[in-house]
Image (cartoon, rainbow, N blue to C red; front, top):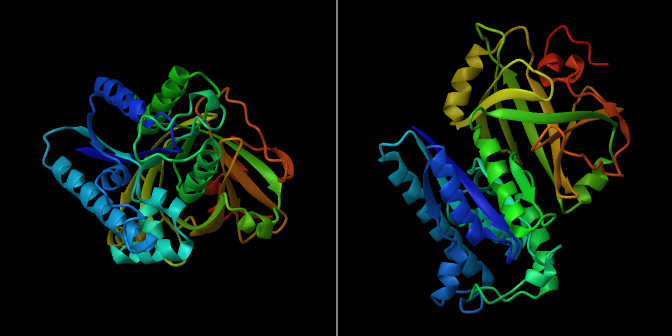
Length: 366
């Protein structure tokens, strides 16, 4: 059994409700049993529990996070009892959407109230798909009429959309679907992104990689749409030419753990399978570390630019350059490069700039 949990998020009037119907219809064709976790805020506000009816905003947010947690745990519990090969749990918004309505201190307090830290909450989902509000690029279609919990003006909706993106930035599989096409085209792009992530029929990763001059880290960390994540990556012994690695990623001492299998690189495309695991499993697998490789540590900065999701990798052995990576939806997708980064050249497919090569004991990182 494979159980995948994703989030559909976005600004007000972005098309989430219709998107859910499309997800049901299309993923069923690929043999998925699709389970939907309804939006918690709409349920609570519709029932009279709201930030303006509770004692404080934090009081309300604790209630919402607790109900969100309970619902998701119940859906996962139910999924494990189903005699199905492939199950996908689709959450209409997730934990991090609440962060758009709180200060950092409030969100930390609300997370602690349900026994979690912000990193655990963000990375408890396998992928996040953000639909951009109609208030950004399709203003004529923005309405408050189809959701009693929606009260934002066009300007407020656009600003809130940015807050949602900022809250989810740092997740390793965040995709942004804008209003550059008509609404049907927008939903088709959503479905294509989900199918690409699920790896139907094969889990293919399409990636481009660039070498840049060492960036201004203070400027990155001051950007509200940028998130810093620490990554520790270890390569394990394999009996073939495939790449098998484990990694921990997180912030401020809080980590989530993954194991990943990758095939040989074939240009932009390569097969990849990944799954989360427990800390104890991670520690067990460390004993299988390949002695030909050292543990690779790096700091990754995630940020969005022109609705693209960039990753900057900073390595401790370089002080003059860094790597920028970008996952694509198709091989011919146009890349709009951020002007604040000084591009040296594209290095997609070049062996000496792959993590697997940089982690080799005989590699000279100069």
